[in-house]
Image (cartoon, rainbow, N blue to C red; front, side, top):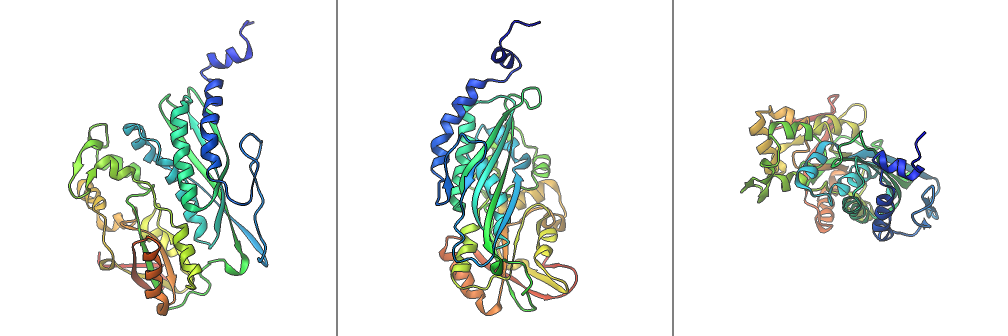
Length: 349
C-alpha cells in the first residue's frame, strides 16, 4: 500500500489543488464586477443564487441557453491569447436567449483543462466577465476541472449556460409574422464562433499563417479570426424599449442563413433576403477563395457579415435601423417576409 497522503497522491496524478485555490482567488474580483441586482452571495457555495425581480410581470418565463466556443479555441492556443474566447462563450448563449425576447439574468461557465494554469484561467474568466457585462448579466458560478491525461497540458475546453427572463405576453415567437414584414440585419464582427473546423482546414492554420498580415483585414489573419462574437442583447433591448414590434429574431450561427433563418419563420411564410443590401466581410472572401468553396455553401455555413436578423413591421423598419445604429450597431434592411414554404430565399447568389 502506498504511503503517500491523499493530497500527495492527487498531485502525483497530475492535479494541482493549490493551483485551483490560486485560480479562484484570481477570478473572485472579476466575478464580483459582474454583480447586478438579484445576485445573492459570492463564489464558494455549491450553487449560484439569484433572486429575479418579477414585479410587474403577469407570467414570468425563464429562457435558458447553453453552448461552447468550439474549435475556435485552437486559435487561442496557437496565439496564446485567452482573454476573448470567454466573450464568445457568453455571446453564443445570450444571443440565443434574446431571440425569445428574454433578458439574460446570469451565466455559469465550465472550463476543462489538462493543467490548471491560474494566470490562463484568469484570462479566460476575464473574457467571460467582459461578455457578461456586455450582456448585462451576472457571472454567479462555474467549474474548473483539471483533467490530466484527457486534455493536453496546454489546452482546454470552454462552455457556458445562461438563464433569461421574459413575461409570457412579451415572448418573441414569430406568431404575429405576416407577409410584408421587414427583415433587419445586424452586422457581425467576423466569423464569430462557427465553422472553424472548415476555416482551419482551408486556411492552413498554424503558428505561421496566423501571423500573416492582410491589407483587406487591416490586421493579421489570427487577429481577425480571434475577434470575439458580437453580443446583441442590448441591441434587441433597444428595439423593444424603442417601441418596435419585434416579431421574430434569428441568431445566425452554425448553418448560416439556410439553417437559421427558417427557424424564425412560421408556416406558409419565407424570408426573402437580398445580398446587395449589406456588405460581405473581407474575411469571408478570403475563406471562400482559398477554400474554393461554392458561394451557396458559404451562406450555409457562415454568417457572411450578418450575425442576427429581426423581423419588424414594414412601417417601423426605418425607425428600427435608426435605433440600432444609435445603439452602436451597423444595421441594414436586408429583405422582407413573403409567402412561401422554403423558409428562406437568398437572392443575388
